[in-house]
Image (cartoon, rainbow, N blue to C red):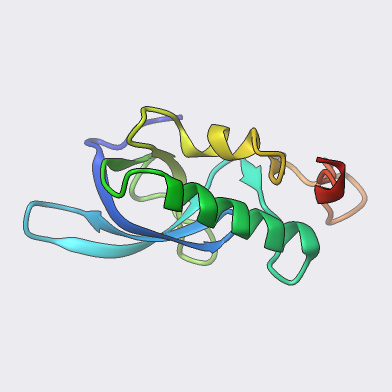
Amino acid sequence: MRIATRPFPLFDLRAVDGDTIECWCGISAEIRQLWRVRLKGIEGGELDTEPGLAAWHALKQFLQTQPTHGYHFVGLETVKDQHGRHIGDILTPTGHMLTSALYETGFFWRRPRRRCPSTTQPCIRPKSPSAI
């Protein structure tokens, strides 16, 4: 993954769903922009599904148990998805990448680069929360 030209500090992180975070991004010392960050490489499911709701709760709990400052955006600031969300990862205050930490909780699964050949569903199926 290419890194941003400089690390962008993030403030006031809030879980929107299992794989999207809304936060304030420090563009400069004087300017902050409200960003939605789509975590690259993982899938948390949709909020109207049981796995999606479990992933959202896991992300919320993770953010609540971490320090409130020291997060940084990792990725290219110009890359966005079809919904206008920045695509990338977040470096946590403890020095870990957020996607890796979330994947290890079991509520998230790897997002494939491509869809299955004959379907619109991801090639990788989520683990059932009850199996964890």
